[in-house]
Image (cartoon, rainbow, N blue to C red; front, side, top):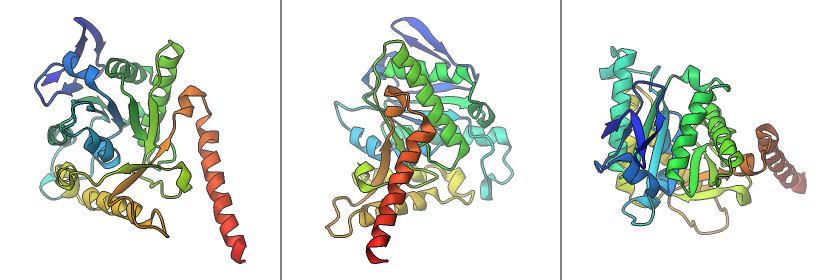
Length: 295
């Protein structure tokens, strides 16, 4: 089901700024029926970011009666690397392919809904893009999730960090308007979070439904055939996270992803640079202490 306009309680609350933006509801219901069910919301920059960073949330909601997952993909898939059967595809053709892949993932993962905002990366990387902030605000208000997953602010991909900051700005405005603030968790994609001190890691269990996990990553054939084995890399990182998490204990997880609680960026209006520098400094001191024991 594709809609260019969201209707909630019989009223139009959001008209997307991009003509190709849409909402896909795998169940065939309307957005106004399914959005309020959302408990877990993930805001990702690109097609496949959701499946890479938030599989634990997808798995927690998979088949559950009291938990429901909604995904938001901000960019339009333009500029994707391409090779093999996709080598001669135009940028517009690639955008369509990546949209179909994202919506296929939503169907495989039994998402409550998948929102595709179809922004060009250049627009996302504009800190003054208040139209995007308004769109994210409307989505967050109408889904009212318990927790939001997005990119962590230490990610090394510019568009990822830009999306995270837009999500923070949207939540700050919601808070300023008297709205409730859900927990905000920054996840790993283009930079792992294994460097965090263990007590600061939110550990996401990625072991359930391994066939679903593989299918969600494997659906992105345009990336895999294009020479980017995100499927193998993501599975490898999850296994490494689980195995190397504790050196003197039996593994608690078979597959894991790490997150960072970024709620303070909203509730305390924490400066994002100072916020992440505290964790970097804590890591530096931990390393220094360990070395000095044996120096």
